[in-house]
Amino acid sequence: MSGGPTQAALIAAANAAMAHAYAPYSGFRVGAALGFADGSVVIGANVENASYGLSLCAETVAVATAMAGGVRGGLVAVAVTGGPGGAPGSDPVTPCGRCRQVLCELAELGETDPVIWCAGADEVLETRLSALLPHAFGPRSLR
Ligand code: THU
Image (cartoon, rainbow, N blue to C red):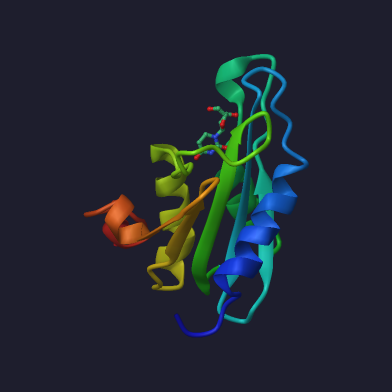
């Protein structure tokens, strides 16, 4: 990975973001941190809603925050952490299907394939967005 925050820094940012999760319904708190090639970090946390289906995942909140701030590429790494009660669970949280698609939009804009670090209590699962969402439908598909 060229540029971008270290794994430890990005997971620490995701953990800090998790503290702001609003998850009164599931009790499952998630934090996400996006790392960019210039070293910047944008965070998100899950934001649930009394109308349960309207809840937003941490990764989606982070992507929306970055893009609303004008970011259109440079996504080189993503860290996700979470679990019941606000502590990383024994199984690392991997981005849900919708979040994979949302992450893909920003990644494809900058033609990157970000590394994904999913932090569990005792391990970090490392993968790539292209592995989580192969043969993705993205902005390029509409050209
Ligand atoms: N959640 C996330 O924030 N990210 C994921 O990738 C998986 C699920 C949230 C959604 C909901 O608020 C809670 O975790 C339980 O599903």
